[in-house]
Length: 459
Image (cartoon, rainbow, N blue to C red):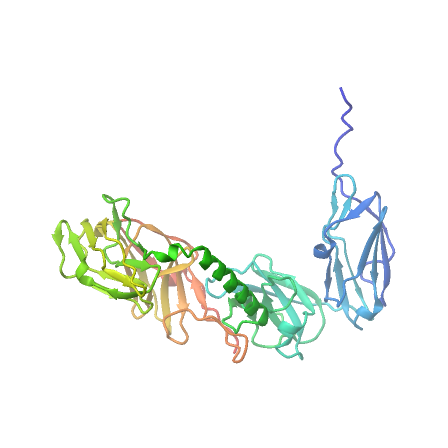
């Protein structure tokens, strides 16, 4: 049999010698060498190499046989500043790519080390959950707000499980932001990037943990976004030309389940919605007939929205009723004269025992709203005006409850704004446990016993 070649090499390279000790003082730039016990290679240096505070240009890193050389130009370094450099897992052996993890060292360009630190957490304002997708960035406090989208920050750190921790900071004031940097340029230059900002300048001597609330601002689109929108518009025009044949027919979709005609699927407190592909010029309600349990319902009403593309049929639905909507040809006509085809829509309504109920006990504190959510979408909301808030006729499912601190009392969650007034987003408390609603069942929950303490932002 062929020789096996021996056991696989699973041992990472071993650092044997370094030209500069860690925590060196009065460093003025130059070359730093690291010697290992085997031949090595570099992988993904651009992403693995981290320097704080950030330099205008990254150091030059090269490898030759068993040696890694890092060259730092003195012109890139600020006086009396503590720097930390980490290579991550970029250094690997040649044979099996075993990584020497976290080669890091610190040095100071002055006669002392900066030893202050800053820690905190980042919370998604609209969900109350920890934000794990962005990074926290620090700028000099004397820079204008425009630095956030014109310049790179001094310090940047990825959020870990909703928290962050900076060390080796100087005794200086900083402006603090959160950036979900989608294009990896360390600038806020896209209106769909999630951000957060701290209301005040902050000195690391203040050891109080910081809480930042992230949001997607409703800002004016930048020039790049405008160009992208123009490109999408051109693509849309090409798509429209390809679908020209489809545009010659007046069609609609309906929100009723017409496939399971004998199954109770339609909500008793819903409206039948017909969504057309073209705006309607005329709607003839006389060509629409509704039957419930084979009896004509003459009390239903027909409406149309402002776009003239959505028609609603409202009725007092009977429980467990077999319903049929007869749509005669010509009941809907668009501006070009196209008519909707005649069709019969058949479905069955639910009964009250198919629904569950949620009773919430809570204490009124200012302008607060209770919102029931499913898949991050608000299903129902009610203002807290009494000690009991009831959600009735809920379909069996798993929901999440959040408490909205509705500061402007407009009944919806409002995002923040970085430009102009620099307005923080409205905050929410998310109940930690999911709520399971079962048919013909009541759930009772004490909101105050499960809610988190209302967050307070310094003004």
